[in-house]
Image 1 (cartoon, rainbow, N blue to C red):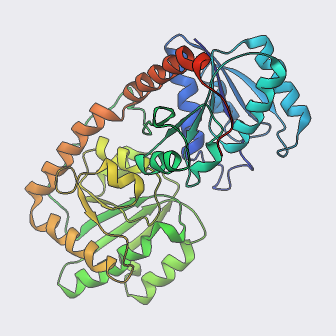
Image 2: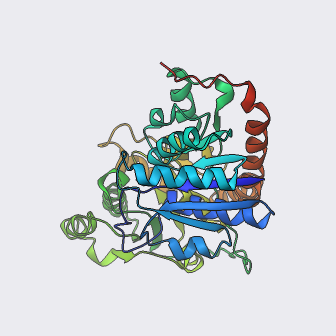
Length: 369
């Protein structure tokens, strides 16, 4: 199969040149589709910090300026590539990639389906794709309500790669004080402050905790200030961007993802892989990945004032029943291997691509209302 894999970001990554979720997915698709023998060309905006990572996938690469939605030069270059490369299918990871690809397809006089991967919180911008693959069913339903047929608004989860030298962690008894951990960009909607406030509640119950966050972002100083205000500054540390995930999960007892708005939560998959007990909010993606009291605990994000207490209750529950906590972690790891490895997700992606190619000629590609 000949596949064009396209991502046009609006700007370079602002997070210390780190590769974020959408970029990681774009790179992983290129890597695994190429490894399986498909001919892949990866198209990206010029000057992106992840270019070297794309080149390591052994896919062909094409850089385009993609300055704005009206960049005719980039659209023409993309159309020329379509004409010469003759893709069987095009995969778009952003709204701009989709709009450019639709225009370039028309100019190239080639016929192929365009599949959009919906990573964000505005799925409607992908309505004009022939198929849309959302990372959670909430977004898929929104697309269907907006007029996308159910057989063209599908769900495909995110994935992570299991390291070649992966060795399972042997989780020991919980530490004293209990060690909590989170990963993610330090933004307000991540609700990391709720964990600090939960720690204050737990301290009042005689339970001492430590908390580490691996990440960068504008909420770093406000979080440190809150820790000082709550007299928790000695119990709290921001690690910066964390690349050694095995070390991170080996050094914590419970992983917490308290986000208000989480489209999927790749960090949950990492916690599942490293068999670490999970507490998460019931945000869109985590609500589907985690089954309450089966492979983790979920708390409601809907009442901000109540959330610290809910987190504190969940943390205390796991602390007081370590057997239950580790059983949740083992079940989560099993679910990860059954659903979220790169091999499993790419297999689903290839099935969708083949289906799209086979049915494309029968689709009426009229713009939705």
